[in-house]
Image 1 (tube, rainbow, N blue to C red):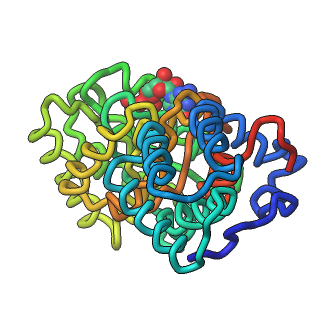
Image 2: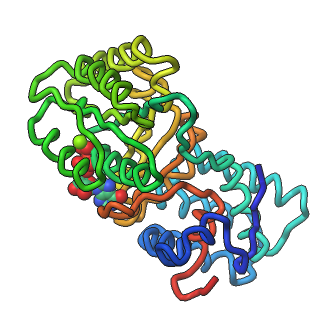
Length: 331
Ligand SMILES: Nc1nc2c(ncn2[C@@H]2O[C@H](COP(=O)(O)OP(=O)(O)O)[C@@H](O)[C@H]2O)c(=O)[nH]1
Ligand SMILES: [Mg+2]
C-alpha cells in the first residue's frame, strides 16, 4: 500500500515519463489542474508544517481544520488524523516539519493502490457510466472514447440518457470528435431498450468497448434508480459479465454532497470505479481522498478540463505530491 510513497521529487513516475514529449510534463499539468485546491490546502498547511512548531494537540486540530476546509470530509479527516497521531507516537516525532511525510503517506494509505481503468478481454468490454446531471458523464465518455480509439480500440457508445433530446445531441458531438459509433433511440426511448440494442450492435460490429451513457435527474430519484438497475440487469442478461465496469462520475466542485449521492447510486448498481471531474476549477479537490474509503470503489480517473485530452488516470502518489508541491517548486 505504501509503495511509491515518498517518491522523491526528482523521481518521475512511469505515467509521467510515458506521457512526456507527447503531451508535455504530466505532473506539471496535474499540478496546474489542482491549482485551486493546492492554493487553499498548501498555503495553510505549509505555514503550519514548515516553521518548526512543536507537535501538539493544537497543531493536530489546526491540520484537521485545513483538511475539512479542503473538503476531505469529517469522517475521512478523523480517520486520517487518528492514523497520523499513531504514527507520531510510534515514531516519537516532535517537530512539525516531520509531519508532512507522515501526512502524505497516510493520505496515500487511504487512497489505496492505483487501479487504472483497463479494457479486459471480454469483448465488448462494457462500461456503464452513472452520475447526477451535470457531473460530467457525457464529457468523460467522450474523453474516454477518444483515449480508447487512440489506442486502436473500436468503440461503440449507447445514448442511454433519452430524457432530453439535447443529451443525445451533445453525446453525438463527442462521439464524432472521438470517432466512436453512437447507438441512439431518440427522445423518450426506453433507456434499457437502447442499451440492449447497443450491446447487440457492438457485438455485431466487433467493437472492443461499449460505453453506456445514462440520465442523472436526481429529482426523480426512485424512477431513476429503478431505470439504472434495469439497465444493469439488461446488460447482464445480454452479455457475460456485463457491466464489466460501473463508473460513477462525480463533480469535484460539489464537495461532500457528491459522496452522499454516490451511496444512492451504489444501491442501484454496485459501483466499481469513480471519476472525479472539474478538479481544475475547485478548491475542493480534497474530496478525492475519502472516495475509496466512503464508497468502496477507487478513483480511477480525474477530469482536469473540458478538452478531449483533459482526462487522467488517477495516480495517488502524483496527486498527493501535486497537493504538497508549490507552483514555483520544480520537480
Ligand atoms: N472545467 C471542467 N469542466 C468539465 C469537466 N468535465 C465536465 N465539465 C463540464 O461540465 C458540464 C457538464 O458536463 P456533462 O458531461 O454534460 O455532464 P452530464 O450531465 O453528467 O453528462 C459541461 O459544461 C462540461 O464541459 C472537467 O473535468 N473540467
Ligand atoms: Mg450527459
